[in-house]
Image 1 (tube, rainbow, N blue to C red):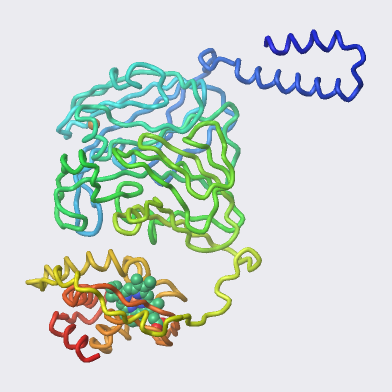
Image 2: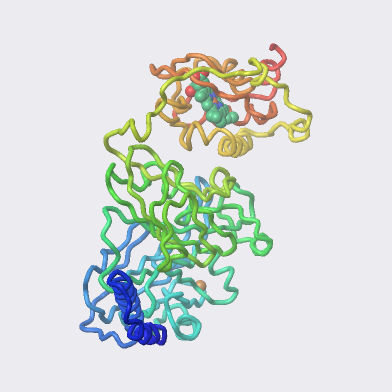
Length: 493
Ligand SMILES: [Cu+2]
């Protein structure tokens, strides 16, 4: 305001001002005025008119946009449920949830809403809980007013003053443990008039989990406090479990549509480097706030923070969502999929134009003898169950990236291992492929592949385990492969 005053005085004195300079000053004045006008509306003074029940949704879905509705009293009824769920195949976990899911139900509000929050702790629960919403201006973000024992309900209310995407979480001691068990979610506060409309909106939230057993160890896995303190996560996942956004659970869009992802990070510990393979984020609401960055490859999402990413999908394909701290994606679960259908556009992406084999150092590259280090881990598995367990781990660590979680492969690129006639026809040939790699044309279930699988760095017992796992999964012929069989093939070469 002061600045504007000085400018006006000066312009009055300068009588020789030409028309164009005057015009520029006028434009400057107008823009500074409108900027100021926007900021001077105090959200605390926005009147609410009427009362509605909030629509709450489970991930990956979000409630309807607020559009241009006026500010209202918004009733949110959120139930805390402690319930067992599946972290990944064969691994169970006791989740603590807001609304029965991890992350918790999505809450959608607009600036100036008066949110009447009912936190209900189910009578079957064992522990008290509360809620700290980062969208709240007030003591503890609501936590101090919402501490609630099983079988009780607490009510408090707050006015949404700042637009943005905010994390909410339980803040009951030990706070880290409540968060680590899944007690977090997102609340969106839309600006006056709502966010610009898009075609598809989804809700994704990353979290890190700490289990007594190692990644993949079966059974009901208790929370491991020491690993959580050491920040050594066994699982890093989107939406509470491995594979929550993979295969049939993938999120979808059609070519030409605009997509908006509300991405949060519950932590408790790890920061996410959120990235979509084969897409560039056209717009990112940095940290979920008002600042917009454009043309972003990877956006950082702090623990207890969020981002809104928006992009148009131009070509069909499966776009992989990852935490680009990439071992988390391929080894700990932080991997999802966006499936886009529609017409190809060869100008934007050609697909494969030519397929030639490129081996500058000759085939030796693929058959390099491995060093002695593997020998140490080469302890033969004892029982069939152990072979299956170790085999699955080896599969998820080395084969999964290409042959996929259910051995289904990727059409045109990686042949299936599920129900594979090629695999089942010749066990020694299969052992050879894993030991030495494979190139040249092969036909699997009637489909031709002509690609390269590089040599896999596995010890003989690991090869035996992974093949036993594959042969005894997904409709294959149930062979058991022993370390001796692998050694025989190895020595024959
Ligand atoms: Cu809690």
